[in-house]
Length: 493
Ligand code: FES
Image (cartoon, rainbow, N blue to C red; front, side):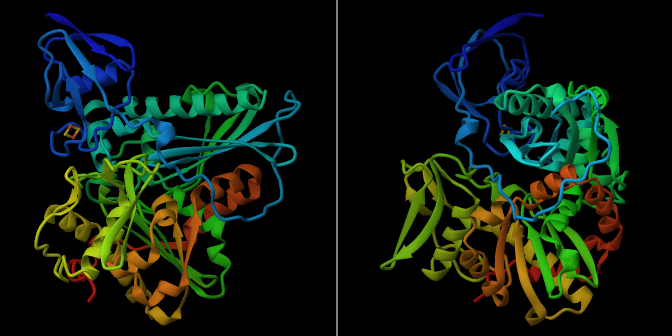
Protein backbone atom coordinates (compact mmCIF):
# COMPACT_ATOMS: atom_id res chain seq x y z
CA UNK A 1 0.00 0.00 0.00
CA UNK A 2 1.20 3.51 -0.88
CA UNK A 3 2.32 5.75 1.98
CA UNK A 4 2.13 9.54 1.92
CA UNK A 5 3.66 12.31 3.99
CA UNK A 6 1.24 14.45 5.92
CA UNK A 7 2.91 17.60 7.14
CA UNK A 8 1.15 19.10 10.17
CA UNK A 9 2.78 22.48 9.81
CA UNK A 10 1.86 24.19 13.06
CA UNK A 11 2.79 21.19 15.19
CA UNK A 12 5.95 20.55 13.12
CA UNK A 13 5.07 16.88 12.80
CA UNK A 14 5.37 14.88 9.61
CA UNK A 15 3.35 11.68 9.68
CA UNK A 16 3.68 8.85 7.16
CA UNK A 17 0.12 7.81 6.50
CA UNK A 18 -1.18 4.81 4.66
CA UNK A 19 -3.21 5.60 1.58
CA UNK A 20 -6.93 5.74 2.35
CA UNK A 21 -6.52 6.77 5.99
CA UNK A 22 -8.60 9.82 6.87
CA UNK A 23 -6.90 13.00 7.96
CA UNK A 24 -8.63 12.62 11.34
CA UNK A 25 -7.08 9.16 11.77
CA UNK A 26 -3.71 10.58 10.76
CA UNK A 27 -4.02 13.38 13.33
CA UNK A 28 -4.75 10.86 16.08
CA UNK A 29 -1.99 8.50 14.95
CA UNK A 30 0.45 11.42 14.88
CA UNK A 31 -0.30 12.11 18.54
CA UNK A 32 -2.40 15.24 18.01
CA UNK A 33 -5.64 15.38 19.96
CA UNK A 34 -8.23 16.70 17.53
CA UNK A 35 -11.82 17.44 18.39
CA UNK A 36 -14.25 15.04 16.75
CA UNK A 37 -17.57 15.74 18.47
CA UNK A 38 -19.64 13.52 16.15
CA UNK A 39 -17.09 10.71 16.32
CA UNK A 40 -15.97 11.21 12.72
CA UNK A 41 -19.32 10.67 11.04
CA UNK A 42 -19.15 13.93 9.10
CA UNK A 43 -22.18 15.44 10.82
CA UNK A 44 -20.82 18.12 13.15
CA UNK A 45 -18.42 19.99 10.90
CA UNK A 46 -16.10 20.67 13.83
CA UNK A 47 -13.02 18.78 12.60
CA UNK A 48 -12.33 21.27 9.82
CA UNK A 49 -8.70 21.76 8.81
CA UNK A 50 -6.97 23.41 5.88
CA UNK A 51 -5.36 20.80 3.63
CA UNK A 52 -3.22 22.13 0.78
CA UNK A 53 -5.00 25.48 1.09
CA UNK A 54 -8.51 24.05 1.04
CA UNK A 55 -10.90 23.86 4.01
CA UNK A 56 -11.96 20.25 4.47
CA UNK A 57 -13.47 18.00 7.12
CA UNK A 58 -10.62 15.89 8.48
CA UNK A 59 -12.88 12.91 9.14
CA UNK A 60 -14.16 12.88 5.56
CA UNK A 61 -10.88 13.44 3.72
CA UNK A 62 -8.92 10.39 2.64
CA UNK A 63 -5.21 10.71 2.12
CA UNK A 64 -4.26 10.03 -1.51
CA UNK A 65 -1.13 12.17 -1.86
CA UNK A 66 1.45 14.06 0.20
CA UNK A 67 -0.39 16.80 2.04
CA UNK A 68 0.28 19.90 4.08
CA UNK A 69 -2.25 20.43 6.84
CA UNK A 70 -2.99 23.46 8.94
CA UNK A 71 -5.00 22.42 11.97
CA UNK A 72 -6.93 25.00 13.86
CA UNK A 73 -7.20 23.35 17.27
CA UNK A 74 -8.13 25.50 20.20
CA UNK A 75 -5.11 25.60 22.46
CA UNK A 76 -5.89 23.86 25.73
CA UNK A 77 -4.63 26.68 27.88
CA UNK A 78 -7.17 28.98 26.25
CA UNK A 79 -10.13 26.82 27.27
CA UNK A 80 -11.99 27.74 30.45
CA UNK A 81 -12.00 24.75 32.80
CA UNK A 82 -13.62 25.07 36.19
CA UNK A 83 -11.34 24.10 39.02
CA UNK A 84 -12.85 25.41 42.22
CA UNK A 85 -15.80 23.94 44.02
CA UNK A 86 -17.78 24.59 47.16
CA UNK A 87 -15.83 24.55 50.36
CA UNK A 88 -16.22 21.90 53.00
CA UNK A 89 -13.65 21.39 55.66
CA UNK A 90 -12.76 17.83 56.56
CA UNK A 91 -10.08 16.62 58.88
CA UNK A 92 -7.15 14.74 57.46
CA UNK A 93 -7.68 11.14 58.39
CA UNK A 94 -5.95 8.50 56.33
CA UNK A 95 -5.49 4.83 56.92
CA UNK A 96 -1.95 3.62 57.29
CA UNK A 97 0.41 5.37 54.90
CA UNK A 98 3.39 3.57 53.33
CA UNK A 99 6.30 3.95 55.78
CA UNK A 100 8.90 4.47 53.07
CA UNK A 101 7.60 7.91 51.98
CA UNK A 102 8.67 10.77 54.16
CA UNK A 103 6.11 13.26 52.89
CA UNK A 104 3.31 11.35 51.09
CA UNK A 105 1.07 13.01 48.54
CA UNK A 106 -2.59 12.27 47.85
CA UNK A 107 -4.60 13.22 44.78
CA UNK A 108 -8.20 13.79 43.80
CA UNK A 109 -9.19 13.59 40.13
CA UNK A 110 -12.43 14.69 38.50
CA UNK A 111 -12.63 12.81 35.20
CA UNK A 112 -15.26 14.66 33.20
CA UNK A 113 -16.36 13.84 29.66
CA UNK A 114 -15.04 17.23 28.55
CA UNK A 115 -12.27 18.07 30.96
CA UNK A 116 -10.12 16.51 33.65
CA UNK A 117 -9.11 18.34 36.81
CA UNK A 118 -6.46 16.98 39.16
CA UNK A 119 -5.72 18.18 42.71
CA UNK A 120 -2.54 17.26 44.56
CA UNK A 121 -2.42 17.50 48.35
CA UNK A 122 0.03 16.91 51.13
CA UNK A 123 -0.82 13.64 52.87
CA UNK A 124 0.44 14.88 56.24
CA UNK A 125 -1.18 18.29 56.59
CA UNK A 126 -3.86 18.14 53.90
CA UNK A 127 -2.68 21.33 52.22
CA UNK A 128 -3.48 21.69 48.54
CA UNK A 129 -0.19 21.89 46.66
CA UNK A 130 -1.16 21.94 42.99
CA UNK A 131 -4.13 21.93 40.64
CA UNK A 132 -4.06 21.11 36.95
CA UNK A 133 -6.69 20.80 34.28
CA UNK A 134 -6.82 19.56 30.73
CA UNK A 135 -9.31 18.56 28.08
CA UNK A 136 -10.25 14.89 28.08
CA UNK A 137 -8.23 13.29 25.25
CA UNK A 138 -11.13 10.90 24.59
CA UNK A 139 -12.79 13.81 22.76
CA UNK A 140 -11.10 12.65 19.56
CA UNK A 141 -13.47 9.64 19.64
CA UNK A 142 -16.68 11.67 20.09
CA UNK A 143 -18.09 14.50 22.17
CA UNK A 144 -20.51 12.54 24.27
CA UNK A 145 -20.44 9.36 26.27
CA UNK A 146 -22.68 7.46 23.85
CA UNK A 147 -20.34 8.03 20.91
CA UNK A 148 -17.31 7.06 22.96
CA UNK A 149 -19.08 3.98 24.25
CA UNK A 150 -19.98 2.98 20.70
CA UNK A 151 -16.35 3.46 19.72
CA UNK A 152 -15.24 1.27 22.64
CA UNK A 153 -17.76 -1.43 21.74
CA UNK A 154 -16.58 -1.48 18.13
CA UNK A 155 -12.85 -1.03 18.60
CA UNK A 156 -12.13 -2.32 22.10
CA UNK A 157 -11.79 -0.45 25.36
CA UNK A 158 -8.04 -0.14 25.61
CA UNK A 159 -7.71 2.88 23.29
CA UNK A 160 -10.12 4.98 25.36
CA UNK A 161 -8.93 3.73 28.75
CA UNK A 162 -5.26 3.93 27.77
CA UNK A 163 -5.36 7.55 26.58
CA UNK A 164 -7.14 8.80 29.67
CA UNK A 165 -5.07 6.80 32.19
CA UNK A 166 -1.89 8.08 30.57
CA UNK A 167 -3.18 11.67 30.53
CA UNK A 168 -4.02 11.49 34.24
CA UNK A 169 -0.70 9.90 35.14
CA UNK A 170 1.21 12.61 33.22
CA UNK A 171 -0.92 15.28 34.89
CA UNK A 172 -0.15 13.89 38.37
CA UNK A 173 3.53 13.59 37.55
CA UNK A 174 3.67 17.18 36.34
CA UNK A 175 1.89 18.43 39.46
CA UNK A 176 4.33 16.54 41.67
CA UNK A 177 7.27 17.98 39.71
CA UNK A 178 5.85 21.51 40.10
CA UNK A 179 6.11 21.05 43.86
CA UNK A 180 9.61 19.64 43.62
CA UNK A 181 8.35 16.12 44.31
CA UNK A 182 8.22 12.77 42.53
CA UNK A 183 5.21 10.90 41.21
CA UNK A 184 6.38 7.98 43.41
CA UNK A 185 5.40 10.06 46.48
CA UNK A 186 1.72 9.82 45.48
CA UNK A 187 0.21 7.14 47.70
CA UNK A 188 -3.52 7.55 47.17
CA UNK A 189 -5.68 8.72 44.26
CA UNK A 190 -9.44 9.19 44.50
CA UNK A 191 -11.42 9.55 41.31
CA UNK A 192 -14.88 10.75 40.37
CA UNK A 193 -16.64 10.85 37.02
CA UNK A 194 -19.91 9.79 35.47
CA UNK A 195 -20.65 6.08 35.13
CA UNK A 196 -19.41 5.99 31.56
CA UNK A 197 -16.10 7.70 32.39
CA UNK A 198 -15.81 5.25 35.32
CA UNK A 199 -16.36 2.19 33.11
CA UNK A 200 -14.13 3.41 30.29
CA UNK A 201 -11.31 4.19 32.74
CA UNK A 202 -11.56 0.82 34.46
CA UNK A 203 -12.17 -1.11 31.22
CA UNK A 204 -15.55 -2.33 32.38
CA UNK A 205 -17.79 -3.05 29.36
CA UNK A 206 -20.14 -0.15 28.68
CA UNK A 207 -22.85 -2.01 26.73
CA UNK A 208 -25.28 -2.07 29.66
CA UNK A 209 -24.96 1.73 29.97
CA UNK A 210 -25.78 2.67 26.40
CA UNK A 211 -28.15 -0.21 25.64
CA UNK A 212 -30.99 -1.56 27.79
CA UNK A 213 -31.07 -1.88 30.79
CA UNK A 214 -28.99 1.40 30.90
CA UNK A 215 -27.39 0.54 34.19
CA UNK A 216 -23.75 0.49 35.26
CA UNK A 217 -22.16 -2.96 35.44
CA UNK A 218 -20.36 -1.92 38.62
CA UNK A 219 -21.95 0.39 41.17
CA UNK A 220 -19.84 -0.23 44.27
CA UNK A 221 -16.78 1.80 45.13
CA UNK A 222 -13.72 0.31 43.46
CA UNK A 223 -10.08 0.17 44.56
CA UNK A 224 -7.38 -0.85 42.07
CA UNK A 225 -3.60 -0.88 42.36
CA UNK A 226 -2.26 2.14 40.48
CA UNK A 227 0.50 0.02 38.94
CA UNK A 228 -2.13 -2.24 37.39
CA UNK A 229 -3.40 0.85 35.58
CA UNK A 230 0.16 1.63 34.42
CA UNK A 231 0.29 4.68 36.65
CA UNK A 232 3.85 4.76 37.97
CA UNK A 233 3.14 6.40 41.28
CA UNK A 234 4.05 4.81 44.65
CA UNK A 235 4.22 1.01 44.14
CA UNK A 236 1.61 0.48 46.85
CA UNK A 237 -0.65 3.33 45.83
CA UNK A 238 -4.28 2.55 45.19
CA UNK A 239 -6.72 4.29 42.85
CA UNK A 240 -10.13 4.57 44.51
CA UNK A 241 -13.31 5.32 42.61
CA UNK A 242 -16.33 6.67 44.44
CA UNK A 243 -19.42 4.52 43.77
CA UNK A 244 -22.03 4.99 41.05
CA UNK A 245 -25.71 5.48 41.83
CA UNK A 246 -27.36 4.22 38.63
CA UNK A 247 -27.74 5.01 34.93
CA UNK A 248 -25.40 7.91 34.19
CA UNK A 249 -25.63 9.17 37.76
CA UNK A 250 -22.12 8.27 38.71
CA UNK A 251 -19.29 8.85 41.13
CA UNK A 252 -19.21 12.54 40.19
CA UNK A 253 -22.71 12.99 41.59
CA UNK A 254 -21.68 11.14 44.75
CA UNK A 255 -18.74 13.57 44.92
CA UNK A 256 -21.15 16.51 44.62
CA UNK A 257 -23.30 15.12 47.46
CA UNK A 258 -20.23 14.61 49.62
CA UNK A 259 -19.05 18.15 48.92
CA UNK A 260 -22.37 19.92 49.40
CA UNK A 261 -23.50 17.94 52.44
CA UNK A 262 -26.89 17.59 50.77
CA UNK A 263 -27.69 14.53 52.86
CA UNK A 264 -27.54 16.65 56.02
CA UNK A 265 -29.63 19.60 54.88
CA UNK A 266 -32.83 20.46 56.66
CA UNK A 267 -34.42 22.16 53.66
CA UNK A 268 -35.44 20.31 50.56
CA UNK A 269 -32.58 20.90 48.09
CA UNK A 270 -32.27 20.41 44.38
CA UNK A 271 -28.83 19.89 42.88
CA UNK A 272 -28.36 20.03 39.13
CA UNK A 273 -25.19 19.34 37.17
CA UNK A 274 -25.73 20.32 33.55
CA UNK A 275 -23.52 18.69 30.96
CA UNK A 276 -24.06 16.39 28.00
CA UNK A 277 -25.96 14.45 30.63
CA UNK A 278 -27.78 16.37 33.29
CA UNK A 279 -27.64 14.78 36.72
CA UNK A 280 -30.31 15.87 39.14
CA UNK A 281 -30.53 15.08 42.85
CA UNK A 282 -33.41 16.10 45.10
CA UNK A 283 -33.43 15.58 48.82
CA UNK A 284 -32.33 16.46 52.31
CA UNK A 285 -31.53 14.67 55.58
CA UNK A 286 -34.65 12.52 55.14
CA UNK A 287 -33.54 10.95 51.85
CA UNK A 288 -32.41 11.62 48.30
CA UNK A 289 -33.51 10.68 44.80
CA UNK A 290 -31.52 11.15 41.61
CA UNK A 291 -31.97 10.87 37.87
CA UNK A 292 -29.99 11.57 34.74
CA UNK A 293 -31.28 13.05 31.54
CA UNK A 294 -29.59 13.18 28.16
CA UNK A 295 -29.19 16.84 27.23
CA UNK A 296 -26.72 16.16 24.43
CA UNK A 297 -23.68 18.28 23.71
CA UNK A 298 -25.49 21.52 22.69
CA UNK A 299 -24.45 23.32 25.87
CA UNK A 300 -20.84 22.54 25.02
CA UNK A 301 -21.15 24.00 21.55
CA UNK A 302 -21.42 20.74 19.60
CA UNK A 303 -24.41 20.45 17.23
CA UNK A 304 -24.68 24.26 17.23
CA UNK A 305 -23.71 25.71 13.84
CA UNK A 306 -21.27 28.28 15.23
CA UNK A 307 -20.93 26.52 18.58
CA UNK A 308 -17.63 26.14 20.35
CA UNK A 309 -16.24 25.55 23.82
CA UNK A 310 -15.83 28.41 26.24
CA UNK A 311 -12.43 29.43 24.96
CA UNK A 312 -10.86 32.52 23.45
CA UNK A 313 -13.02 34.02 20.73
CA UNK A 314 -16.29 32.56 22.04
CA UNK A 315 -19.29 34.80 22.63
CA UNK A 316 -19.99 33.90 26.26
CA UNK A 317 -22.44 36.59 27.24
CA UNK A 318 -25.28 38.26 25.32
CA UNK A 319 -27.50 41.02 26.69
CA UNK A 320 -30.00 43.66 25.65
CA UNK A 321 -28.95 47.27 26.02
CA UNK A 322 -31.17 50.13 24.83
CA UNK A 323 -33.15 47.60 22.83
CA UNK A 324 -30.01 46.40 21.03
CA UNK A 325 -28.48 42.95 21.32
CA UNK A 326 -24.89 43.25 22.59
CA UNK A 327 -22.35 40.58 23.38
CA UNK A 328 -19.10 39.85 25.16
CA UNK A 329 -16.31 37.71 23.73
CA UNK A 330 -13.81 35.74 25.82
CA UNK A 331 -10.44 37.42 25.37
CA UNK A 332 -12.15 40.61 24.12
CA UNK A 333 -11.37 39.77 20.53
CA UNK A 334 -13.41 39.29 17.35
CA UNK A 335 -15.90 36.45 17.84
CA UNK A 336 -15.29 33.13 16.14
CA UNK A 337 -18.21 31.24 17.65
CA UNK A 338 -20.62 31.00 20.55
CA UNK A 339 -20.32 28.85 23.67
CA UNK A 340 -23.09 27.38 25.85
CA UNK A 341 -23.55 30.33 28.19
CA UNK A 342 -23.66 32.70 25.21
CA UNK A 343 -26.20 30.50 23.48
CA UNK A 344 -28.48 30.57 26.52
CA UNK A 345 -28.23 34.35 26.81
CA UNK A 346 -28.76 34.78 23.08
CA UNK A 347 -31.92 32.67 23.15
CA UNK A 348 -33.23 34.67 26.12
CA UNK A 349 -32.54 37.97 24.32
CA UNK A 350 -34.07 36.75 21.06
CA UNK A 351 -37.19 35.73 23.00
CA UNK A 352 -37.36 39.11 24.75
CA UNK A 353 -36.80 40.91 21.45
CA UNK A 354 -39.62 38.91 19.82
CA UNK A 355 -37.26 37.38 17.27
CA UNK A 356 -38.04 33.88 18.54
CA UNK A 357 -41.54 32.91 19.65
CA UNK A 358 -42.58 30.60 22.50
CA UNK A 359 -42.67 27.60 20.18
CA UNK A 360 -39.07 28.29 19.17
CA UNK A 361 -39.91 29.53 15.70
CA UNK A 362 -37.45 32.07 14.39
CA UNK A 363 -38.32 34.65 11.78
CA UNK A 364 -34.79 34.76 10.43
CA UNK A 365 -31.23 33.80 11.29
CA UNK A 366 -29.67 36.20 13.76
CA UNK A 367 -26.17 37.38 12.82
CA UNK A 368 -23.67 38.62 15.41
CA UNK A 369 -21.16 38.93 12.57
CA UNK A 370 -21.33 37.58 9.00
CA UNK A 371 -19.66 34.38 10.25
CA UNK A 372 -21.14 33.97 13.71
CA UNK A 373 -24.86 33.49 13.88
CA UNK A 374 -27.74 31.57 15.41
CA UNK A 375 -30.19 29.86 13.12
CA UNK A 376 -33.42 27.94 13.50
CA UNK A 377 -31.64 24.61 13.81
CA UNK A 378 -29.60 25.93 16.74
CA UNK A 379 -32.71 27.06 18.59
CA UNK A 380 -34.24 23.61 18.04
CA UNK A 381 -31.10 21.92 19.43
CA UNK A 382 -31.25 24.21 22.44
CA UNK A 383 -34.90 23.35 22.98
CA UNK A 384 -34.10 19.62 22.99
CA UNK A 385 -31.30 20.11 25.49
CA UNK A 386 -33.13 22.43 27.85
CA UNK A 387 -36.30 20.31 27.74
CA UNK A 388 -34.34 17.26 28.88
CA UNK A 389 -33.08 19.04 32.00
CA UNK A 390 -36.35 20.83 32.74
CA UNK A 391 -38.34 17.60 32.38
CA UNK A 392 -35.92 15.77 34.68
CA UNK A 393 -36.38 18.44 37.36
CA UNK A 394 -40.15 18.47 37.05
CA UNK A 395 -40.50 14.71 37.15
CA UNK A 396 -38.22 14.33 40.14
CA UNK A 397 -40.22 16.93 42.06
CA UNK A 398 -43.51 15.25 41.08
CA UNK A 399 -42.14 11.82 41.92
CA UNK A 400 -41.34 12.99 45.44
CA UNK A 401 -44.49 15.09 45.77
CA UNK A 402 -42.39 18.19 46.41
CA UNK A 403 -43.85 21.55 45.43
CA UNK A 404 -41.59 24.19 43.90
CA UNK A 405 -42.12 26.51 46.89
CA UNK A 406 -40.81 23.82 49.23
CA UNK A 407 -37.40 23.77 47.55
CA UNK A 408 -35.04 25.80 49.71
CA UNK A 409 -32.07 25.93 47.34
CA UNK A 410 -31.11 24.99 43.82
CA UNK A 411 -27.42 24.09 43.80
CA UNK A 412 -25.86 24.38 40.34
CA UNK A 413 -22.83 22.13 40.06
CA UNK A 414 -20.31 21.86 37.25
CA UNK A 415 -18.68 24.18 34.78
CA UNK A 416 -21.72 25.09 32.73
CA UNK A 417 -23.77 25.82 35.83
CA UNK A 418 -21.02 28.11 37.00
CA UNK A 419 -20.76 30.15 33.82
CA UNK A 420 -24.40 30.39 32.80
CA UNK A 421 -26.50 33.40 33.66
CA UNK A 422 -29.31 32.09 35.93
CA UNK A 423 -31.67 34.80 34.65
CA UNK A 424 -31.28 33.52 31.08
CA UNK A 425 -31.54 29.89 32.24
CA UNK A 426 -34.90 30.70 33.88
CA UNK A 427 -36.02 32.85 30.94
CA UNK A 428 -35.68 29.97 28.47
CA UNK A 429 -37.13 27.44 30.94
CA UNK A 430 -33.97 25.43 31.50
CA UNK A 431 -34.36 26.03 35.23
CA UNK A 432 -37.66 26.71 37.00
CA UNK A 433 -38.46 30.40 37.16
CA UNK A 434 -39.95 29.93 40.65
CA UNK A 435 -36.48 29.06 41.95
CA UNK A 436 -34.66 31.99 40.33
CA UNK A 437 -33.95 33.62 43.71
CA UNK A 438 -32.64 30.39 45.23
CA UNK A 439 -29.97 29.42 42.70
CA UNK A 440 -26.51 28.88 44.20
CA UNK A 441 -23.58 27.91 41.94
CA UNK A 442 -21.35 25.41 43.76
CA UNK A 443 -18.60 25.17 41.15
CA UNK A 444 -16.78 21.92 40.60
CA UNK A 445 -18.39 20.17 43.55
CA UNK A 446 -17.46 16.75 42.12
CA UNK A 447 -13.79 17.74 42.29
CA UNK A 448 -14.25 18.90 45.87
CA UNK A 449 -15.82 15.52 46.68
CA UNK A 450 -12.78 13.72 45.22
CA UNK A 451 -10.46 15.83 47.37
CA UNK A 452 -12.50 15.17 50.50
CA UNK A 453 -12.39 11.42 49.94
CA UNK A 454 -8.67 11.62 49.12
CA UNK A 455 -7.96 13.30 52.45
CA UNK A 456 -10.28 11.28 54.63
CA UNK A 457 -10.69 7.51 54.38
CA UNK A 458 -13.88 7.67 56.46
CA UNK A 459 -15.49 10.01 53.92
CA UNK A 460 -14.53 7.60 51.14
CA UNK A 461 -16.22 4.76 53.02
CA UNK A 462 -19.24 6.97 53.74
CA UNK A 463 -19.63 7.69 50.01
CA UNK A 464 -20.87 4.10 49.57
CA UNK A 465 -23.62 4.71 52.13
CA UNK A 466 -24.62 7.90 50.33
CA UNK A 467 -24.83 6.09 47.00
CA UNK A 468 -26.84 3.24 48.52
CA UNK A 469 -29.24 5.65 50.23
CA UNK A 470 -29.92 7.64 47.05
CA UNK A 471 -32.84 6.23 45.13
CA UNK A 472 -32.26 6.19 41.39
CA UNK A 473 -35.23 7.13 39.22
CA UNK A 474 -35.03 5.84 35.65
CA UNK A 475 -36.85 8.53 33.67
CA UNK A 476 -37.19 6.35 30.59
CA UNK A 477 -39.34 3.93 32.61
CA UNK A 478 -41.83 6.61 33.59
CA UNK A 479 -44.84 6.83 31.31
CA UNK A 480 -45.15 10.60 31.79
CA UNK A 481 -41.57 11.43 30.79
CA UNK A 482 -42.21 11.79 27.06
CA UNK A 483 -45.21 14.09 27.60
CA UNK A 484 -43.37 16.30 30.08
CA UNK A 485 -40.34 16.40 27.78
CA UNK A 486 -42.46 17.59 24.86
CA UNK A 487 -44.20 20.19 27.05
CA UNK A 488 -40.86 21.53 28.26
CA UNK A 489 -39.72 22.04 24.69
CA UNK A 490 -41.72 25.28 24.58
CA UNK A 491 -40.16 28.46 25.90
CA UNK A 492 -42.02 30.04 28.83
CA UNK A 493 -44.11 33.06 27.94
S1 FES B 1 -17.67 16.27 11.02
FE1 FES B 1 -15.72 15.40 11.37
S2 FES B 1 -15.76 14.88 13.45
FE2 FES B 1 -17.72 15.66 13.10
